[in-house]
Image (cartoon, rainbow, N blue to C red; front, side, top):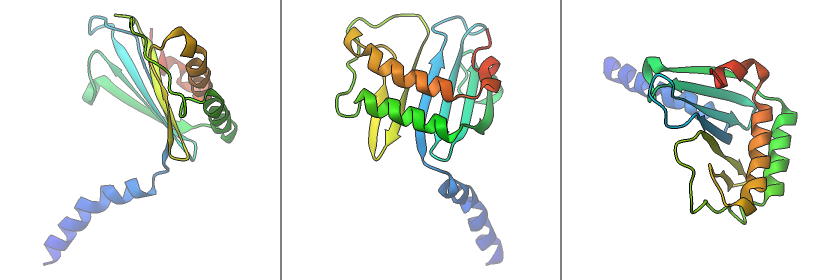
Length: 157
């Protein structure tokens, strides 16, 4: 009986650590576009409500394994507040941006989302010109929140 109980507790241990994690406040992704694997990279940034930040940088077309590295850090309360202000001012939850009918092909870009009070503020990669400023203001606030020590990690080329 004890081995079964221990196995069950060990299986549930990762779930316990997830329960302690602060909710996601913002996500942000970047890619340098459709390039040959030796030149391609992308980043996934997650900012939690408590300020914890996790950045995953992958090279080639990898999504896990040795082609991906993760860094962790902290963003300031002021940065969280600036993202919140930008997202609320954008009104993207009530009036979402419209995706461009003529999407850019092959180039790099960025995207993301902010989550406030159960509302999602989607930050599209490419929008119609009328929505571009609203989306870019929120993306800029997220980029500004990423600690400078991660700059070379985020932009390896």
